Image: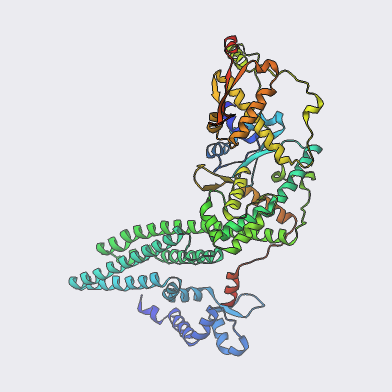
Length: 415
Length: 209
């Protein structure tokens, strides 16, 4: 700059206006933080600030406000403090490396290499500290995430904890964004050692922190969505339960009669798939014939005299009838199996093998009754042998111990 | 179509397919082409695939509705409504018993013996269970917790809400059908404008602090 310019009008004006700023620093800072300026109360001073275009009228309604250029200047001047507010760890870290980098460069210029080495060790310690602080922060976040915030019990508390963790992640992310590598590059100047630490290494580490933090952030958001959904379900179950208990006769609308039936209520009735023989498949003919032959002959329709049916008293409970029917069915299965195996079988053995719960005496009685009840043609197909023993040595009353059912030999040959 | 044979049979019998009940087929149902093929097959039976809103459960719906079918759906809705109270009551009971912070959802594993033991140790839970056993859905003659709970679990298996992977072990897995039921409850709550109060004591604490 030439001598002339120091004396020039621009120089004089600059000094004057900076003095003006200094004189009204309090007013300027208040306006910077959004406090309205009372034009009348400030009188002359605000007039001068307006003339110097430090303040301006943005619109007719509101009073004068601090202009944009002054705002930017202040933002730059108080950047460190702002950073510290966003993230004290990274704010302090940045200030510290700025100071150390300057001192290292200075020591190097003065040829004081030992001091420069000493300072450099401190600087790299600072970088390590920041990294380990971020990594342990990440670890703590993952621990909380992986345990689904189990250290608090209720869902609303979990959601609050999740939001707290989310803010922590945001604070780190905002903090890392404050690291301005362009600034660090200029700070390092031509010092290769500094550049390698502050630019190359730090940049790698920071970008890794970024991606890990974003991953945590993503997981936190997913978990919060799940918590919210679970919370909504809890409320739904509790709320609907209370409603149904309070109004036992509650009936919703008949959604099935609406023009558009909601899909939830349109549930098709069950259809039991039925199978039938496909008689047109000639290749299956042999198998079918074999199956048909193995079937027991269809029972002859029998006409029972009316009195044989017995009278069912009204007292007879349906349960009793159902049990009787079940017993008959089990005995029928016994007969069918003997027929299918074309062999002989003890009635009591079969009872045990089939894990049926019938009393042995009732079972034997029913087998005899069923045999006697067979139509004459069917009865000829089976033989029922009685295994009997006298009740006591001195009593000739014969007790049926077991029965053996077998298919008559003549019938076996016929097949 | 033969590759979908078992799936079709299950669906036609009124089954619900979810990731728990049949993960293989549930996976296959994610494919649009598979669904189209199945729908084509079902067309002559007046049925089509339907799913819960989030696609976690698949079942069959009528393709076209006429009055008799609508009437049968109305009847079905009445049955569902009858079982809604006991089902929600059961979900609440299980949550209170296990101390979980959330209601039953698909994939949850329940141990019947453990639940029975906890209910036995707590008279108020036992009362809740007893109340459930007076409903038509869980009607039980038994007076002791084990018997009552066995019946409740049997009913839940029958109705497809629970799955017992090993018959001799007392572990049960909750199926996706529970999500379907909750979706249904949500629909009724919104449709009938039923007010659900905000319960949380936690929020009151927030106001105080």
